[in-house]
Image 1 (cartoon, rainbow, N blue to C red):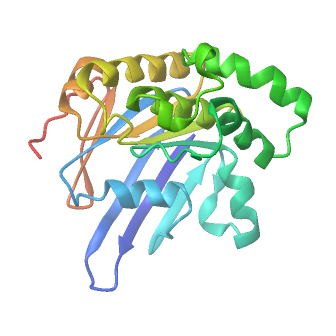
Image 2: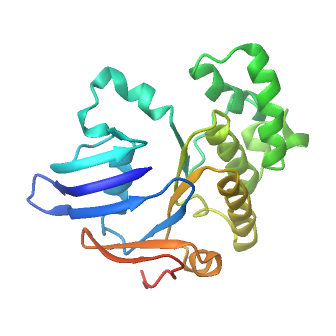
Image 3: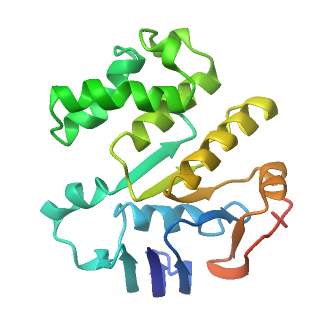
Length: 228
């Protein structure tokens, strides 16, 4: 599903953000990406999102070498991905239903499809009774659930979560992780970058640890392993 082949990224100051990274994430896996600040996690994710290019090597996603994509092809590639950020990135002038529906309108889904799919996804994330609420009327955990619903409403093959629990209290964070686990069990491949040691240790999923731009550790049922 995701493969990095001898991937390096060198910035202008001749510092390696990633150095000869080789790894493979299989379809349906749930993988934590961990490591100290500045280790290379953000560079890794930005490459998957096609926001930056590797200096050398190949990045293969769903059988496609995304390093060869033309600029006009990038928006279509990104439709294969669901993305959840720490800061939610909801549209404040749209209610919950409209925020999720917006993601479907971007891919030109029909009104019939939107009316059918959005309630199903809102039910999955536990927000059926909040569909008319606006972002400012929601708690942080509820806003993140809207973000999750928006990320999965178009059935992405891969969900990339960048510190999705960073702004949440521990109890709410674990509720979000339960929802992510359900999404994973439904077949979506999940890659989650996090500093949340307690979450990683409790979930016992595959852990890829990056340190100084290299893969320092790759464990099938790993622990966080870093004091940041």
